[in-house]
Length: 420
Picture 1 (cartoon, rainbow, N blue to C red):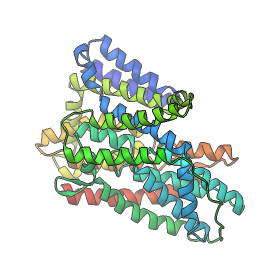
Picture 2 (cartoon, rainbow, N blue to C red; picture 1 turned 180 degrees about the vertical axis):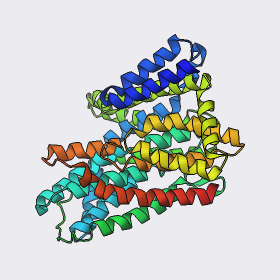
Picture 3 (cartoon, rainbow, N blue to C red; picture 1 turned 45 degrees about the vertical axis):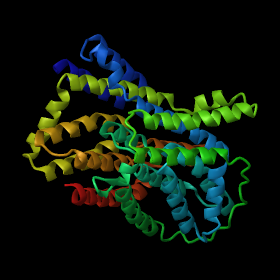
Picture 4 (spheres, rainbow, N blue to C red; picture 1 turned 60 degrees about the vertical axis):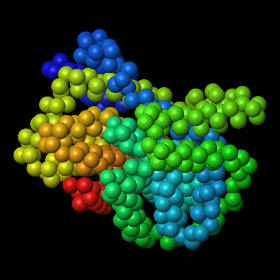
C-alpha cells in the first residue's frame, strides 16, 4: 500500500507540474503499477472502462462533422436575431452554449459558438471578452446535465452504471439534469446582474447557409438512441459506447461515398487522443491503488475526520471538489474520487448516490472559478489571444466566481435535500 500511495501522489504532483505532458505521466504511472505487480496483469483489460473511451471518441468525431456542417453557426444566428442589446446577446449566447453543451463536449461547444460572439463584437466595435467568458462558463455548467455532456458525466455514468435516462430521473427522484438546470437559472440571473450596464444595441448577422443536414441527424440520432437504449435496459456494458461509435461510422461512410477521402484523417485529427490516453492510464492507476487498499484507507480517513457525520462528509466532498477543480483538471480528480465515494458509502453502509452527485456538482462546476480550471476555459482564452485579447485572471474571475458560487450552492442544497 505504501509503494502504491507514493507512486499515486507522485503521479498527481507530475500531472500538476507538467500539464502539457499529463497523458504521458498517467501512462508511465500505469506501466509502473503493472511492472511492479501492484496491478495484476489479468485485471488490466477489465480495469479500463472501454465504454467511456468509446463514448468520448465517438461523440468527438460526430461533433467534428456537426461543426463542419455549419449548423451551430446558423442556430446562433437565429438566436442573435431575437436580441436587441449586448447584454441580452451575451445572455442568449451563454444559454445557447449551455443547451448545446448538455449534449456535446464543452470544448467543442466553445469552438462552435465563440466565433459567432467574435463576429458580433467586430461588427459592433466592442470587446468579445465578456461574451466568450460567459459562453465558456455556461458550457462547463451544463456539461453535467446529461450522460454525454461532459467527460466527468461519462465517467460517473460508466462507474455507477447509470444510463442516459438516469440523469433525468434517478431512484424515482429528479436527477442531475434538473439539479443543473435550476443552477443554470440561478447563475444566469447572476449574469444578467453582472452585465446590467451593457445595453449597447446590436444588429443581426447575415444568416449562415447550411447545405448538409446529415451531421445534425447523426448527433440527434446518437442522443435519441442513447435514450431508447436506456428504456430497453440492455445488459451490455458497452452499449452506449457502441452507439456513439456507430453514428460516427455512419458519418464517415457517407463522406467516403461522397468521395471525401480525407474524412478519416480529419476525424482522426479531431478526436482528442491525449485525453483518451490520459483516461486509460488513470483507469489503471486507480485500479492499482484500489487493489493495494489505498482507496479504502482514504475513505476511512474521510469518515474519521468527519466523525461519521454524513452532512460533514458530503460538504467536504462538494467544496473540496470545488477548490481542487479550480486549479487542476477535473477528469483525473473525478476518476480518482469516484471509488473513494463508493468506499465512504461502504464504510457508512449507505447508498453512494448522494456522494457521487455531490462530487460531480463540485468538480464540474468548480472548474469554472479560474481560467485554468477547465479545458473549455483554456480554449476560450486561447481563442481570445488569437484575436489580440489577453485576459487577466481577475477579469475572468469577476464573472466566473459569482456565477460558479451561485450554481454550486444551488446544486449542493438540491442534491442534499433530494438524496440525503
